[in-house]
Image 1: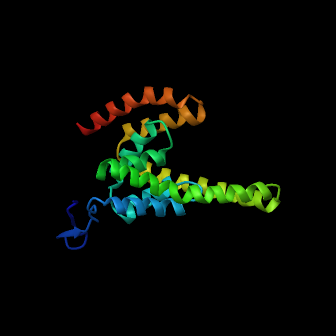
Image 2: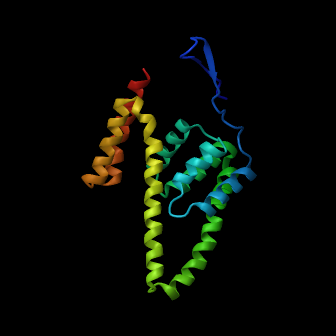
Image 3: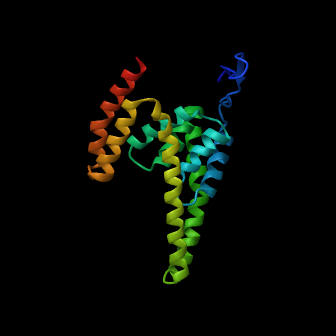
Length: 200
């Protein structure tokens, strides 16, 4: 649990208390299922931005720093980031039952919707309105990813070394087109060393 951090008032010079929202208790298997079910039903165009809002801000299952660390681990593993995140979060709190509940909740609604929409799309894919609709969804998804990237990278402003590692990864993958696996193999040890030096 987080404890209130004392601060000093600018006007009176007396200590003031700032209430920091505490991390909630460990979620149940049921809470994990319905939390990720709601996420799967609302995450149009990309689940990670909404996943952070659901896990950190709404349910307070993790702190922002814990979410960033867990997401970093999930990005290093093969498979979709949101899939890995749901399994890792479920395993953390409720073991294999939590992992199973989280992944089933996440994919249940989208799977049903994709089957229905896929059937409809086969009949109307040449319609110009449908093409414009998908173009708009792609733009919205890009905006959501930018928002999440900003929230995840904002804490790195406190550490120049870690910020440089993040920038180097971005340049290697997005600009130089270095394969992701090679980038991770090179940058992960550097990131671990930088984190260790910062913590000293």
